[in-house]
Amino acid sequence: WQREGFFAYYNSIHHQGQLFPYNDAGVVRVGDYHFFSPASSKIYEDYRKEDDQFENDRYLEFLSAPIRFEQWADMFKKVYEDHAYAGIPFVFLTLFRDVVFKVDNNCPFLYAYGQSKSGKSKFAESISNLFFREMPAFNLNSGTDFAFANRLARFRNCPVFFNEFDDNVVKDEWFQALKGAYDGEGRERGKGGSKRKTEIQRINSTLILAGQYLSTKDDNSVLSRSIMRPFKIKRNRSEEQTRTYNELKKLEKEGLGGILTEILAHREVVEKSYYQEFNEVFKELGKVIRAQDDYYDERVLRNYSALTTMVKIFGSIFSLPFTLSEYKKWAIHEIVNLSSMINDNDVLSDFWNIVETLLDQGEIREELHFKIDYRASLKIMVGNHNTETSHFSKPKSLLFLRLNNIHPIYASFKRRTGGHPIDLTSLTSYLKDRESFIGVSKGERFQDKTTGKSFTTSSFVFDLESLGIAIDRESTPPIATLEKSSEDPKIDFDQQDDDLPF
Image 1 (cartoon, rainbow, N blue to C red):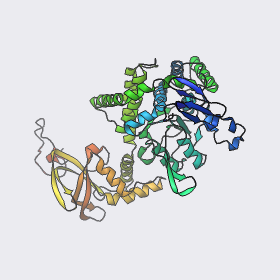
Image 2: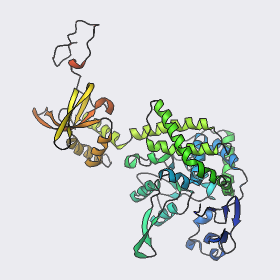
Image 3: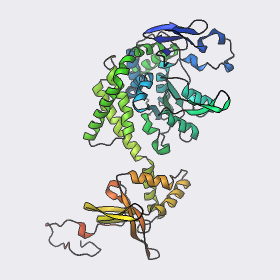
Image 4: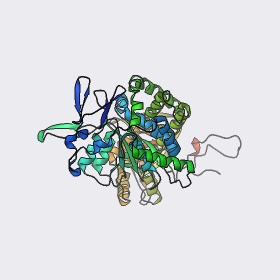
């Protein structure tokens, strides 16, 4: 897509519903201006392949498609089944990425992961091949930094397929660049060979990622930016599905780029309606999820709202292989599941899981590194020196955690098991942002049972029930906090012994 208002293939342009081919010099006129496409110019046709800097441009080729978009969508749905709910709207999202980007200054990835030969790469190829004529994926196990950056920035409103995406393989700087692509952030580079002039290499394409393993790096940063599709090996495909797959791949070899013009014809509709429709869809999906008493991550909700908005717009233009009602149910299910996955696998969940493991292995001990108590009120620190008393509606089970004391033990365990521990400052910030965090207690009594020594120190305080971890190994609520029962008059609830009377 060109900012001047037309879509440029390497061999022709699509402008206001019409196709205009380039002349032999690679020039075409649009209104009062002439535009030059080096990839189509005969000036460069005799370049050696290794010297041809426009080779990748030629994959974006207009060819009259032998089928219509609706036929392609039906075939895509038969072949890839439920994955089509993500793939088909992603085509719309990609072709109008610049419109989508204006709403939130971001655009989601499409991320397929699963076992080898599970179909994830073929799925990604089928979407890419609707734009490009069999353009190879960029393999993240190889390639130069320049080639990687150039692939990210070369095309506008087209998909870029990165294969072999794996947290343990991808260079860290490439991983950060992929993350930044969600927000359109590119790299700064020198301009014109000058040491003083720089330019920003913008990201204008959507990303399709495929790999065997689920990415959890940087607190699930890729997951929260993605429309996620898990792939599994399916061994018993029907004859019709196999036949349709072979036919689809044959058509991809012939070239399907012409199908895009059917969708491009409706750009004005998208420009005029997307913003309002997105806001309505976002509010509606969020309201339904809240009514179900389910949790959602706001970024995930926005990602799937973008897809749903495209289905809402184009469902009235094309006959899609699913209804808007069906699609909303699918989107809600995916939002809740992915949000839950991100929540369960985030860095704090990892921290608490390790704390439980360290407790079971005896590396941390109750009363020394943490303690659990039942309180109806608590004095918490306000500022650096002052305290205030927080009163609860009923006694709470509170976890008092000596974070400064536990963090080195957690970090050592994480390194021993091949991981990278989160630093204390970041961990503190994350913990304070959770609803389970109550505050910091300035002076709590702890005890080292091996030496019998006790001491008073500050600690982080959490609502144990809200925290939802199984760290309570010894503590039992004192009798005074239990409700009196009239069913067993023999129990004396007023006694203050440490042991329960039954």
